[in-house]
Structure formats: structure tokens, C-alpha cells
Length: 348
Ligand SMILES: CSC[C@@H](O)[C@@H](O)C(=O)COP(=O)(O)O
Figure 1 (cartoon, protein in one colour):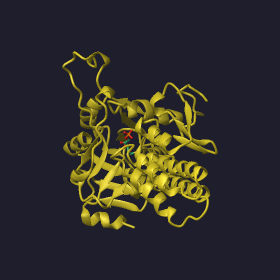
Figure 2 (cartoon, helix red, strand yellow):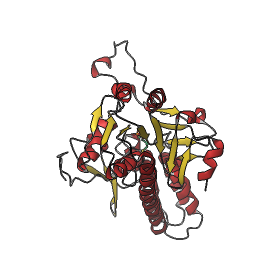
Figure 3 (spheres, rainbow, N blue to C red):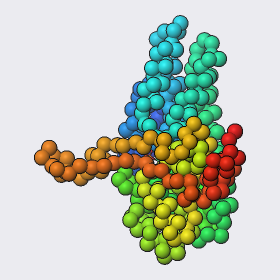
Figure 4 (cartoon, helix red, strand yellow):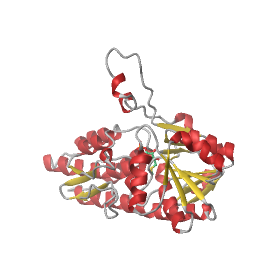
């Protein structure tokens, strides 16, 4: 596998299914190193999610579905007469891997619902379902790419945040899928924010765009207001980890700041996510659990010493209220000016 970020043939898939298990790209090492590791158990996949080897809401959901496949295979081999209780424990471990991306719970629920109809070896039907979830997400990405590109037609510049591309999804991307489609239709000035502290933008998004040979400009997150004031971008395009029934959207920390800045500068704000990211059971953003990660992901090494009086506060998502969002783009259609009523149009 290539380790050169300029190599356009490097693979950007976050994982591959193999008979040995799920082959997961370690996104913590990008862009310096492209390294895959095989996980052959549900607990292993949960660990891969918790440690952010695999991340991004749809990719987390798909990986968890494959985690269930692996759990079922192991548990059925251990005890073909009684494997369900052990698999339920595995599914609990998967559910505890990260709290905010609802795609994780959506995928586990779909896999769990399929168990009722299974007689005999659960591995073949569960593998087929996980692959279907993966294929459906890829198809949704392409559909959203076209719908979002329709909205930004005629713009000269777009700003995106975090990484929402092939690495974060079944392939192609949500917000970055719209960026890809819009670029193909002539929107040439693409800006990506670094996305501190984990640097999904600087390490992952521009890596993907470089592979696609889509020219892009990386900015410090703190340069966003000044960029908007310059008139260089007409849309901010982001993904989501969970969208509440009223259209409030949880996404990578810093998204809310961008929405506030966009409104101030007359820049439009688009959230792109498959309907597997919509949590109809959550009325509004206040009920969304925001993951707090270890402050060590944020703090410089020198402040980790025991005698240090410096702490870190590391919420990794925030919630953008629906009234700051101009459009939510899903595979089932576009919701303009989201509200409880407007969101009903995309409820299956
Ligand atoms: C298509 S990905 C949408 C979101 O999952 C993405 O914007 C994001 O916030 C990812 O967060 P991460 O912490 O890297 O998993």
C-alpha cells in the first residue's frame, strides 16, 4: 500500500470486508501512513470505532453492522444451539463504542431486527444485510451529491468542515460528496477547515481531495470568519452525526460556530446526511448526547504532567439549531428551512 499522499491511486476506503474479518484503515495515521488492520470480533470492531481508527457517522454504522456479522460468526461457532445471548452482549459492546452518531444505533437496530427471522447459521444472512447497508449508503451518497450540487450551482466557493468523504461513509461522502459533484459541475474554489483538535480536515479531507486531484485550500478554523467576509464562499457544507426531528443537527465541534458566522455574513449553510442520521425519537438538539473525549487529544504533552494546573475541555460535537440551517440534503430529498413540519417530507 502506498504511503505517499500524492499518490492518486491510494485507496481511501475506510474498511473492506474479507473472510478473515473487517480490514480497517487506521485513520489516526493518515496522511503519513496508509495501514490496514484486520478485526475479527465484535469487540475488536468496537475498539476500532472507540479509538477512531474508523470514524464518521455512516462509516461507524456500517462498521458496526460488520461487527455484528463477526460476533454472530464467532458465537455460532462457539455454541450453535444457543448463540443469541452472547451476540446480544457483543451488540451492547458495539453500542457503547461512541455515543453521538445515531447511525451506529440505527445499524445495530437493523441488524438486531434481522435476528428474529434467522434459523440456523446467522453468518450468511447477516453478512448480506451488512453489505446491503454499505451499498445503500454509497447509493445515498451519490444521490445527495447531485441534490446538493443542484443547490450550489453557480457558486464560486464552498467551505467544508471535518471529514465527510469516502473515509467517513460507504464511499463518495455526504458533504464532501456534494463538494465532489459541485466541483465537477464547475464550482472551483473549495476550502476545507483544519478541524481542530483531531484535524479531520487537515489530515483526511485534503488527503481525499488530493487523491481526486480536486484543488482545495486548507484554512485554520479561526480563519473562517475572515474568509466569509472576503466573499470567497457562498455556502458552508457540513455533514451530521445526528439530526433531531426538528432539524437541529449535531456535527463536529466547530460546526455551530460556522453556522453563526455564515448567518452573519449572508453565506448559506447546508447539512448533508443520509436519513439513517435522522433520529426521529429525539425531539430537538438539546436531547443529543455530545461525546466528550479525553483532554489528552487536545492538551500539549507538557500540560499532562501531574503537577500541571491546566485542564482540557474536549467536547467533540456541537449542535447547530435548525434556524441557522438553510438546507438539509438527504437521499430522500432536500428540506429547506428545516422545522418539525418541513422534516416530515423525508420521513419514510
Ligand atoms: C459523513 S460524516 C458526518 C460526521 O460524522 C462528520 O462530520 C463528523 O463529525 C465526524 O466526526 P468524527 O469524530 O471524526 O467521527
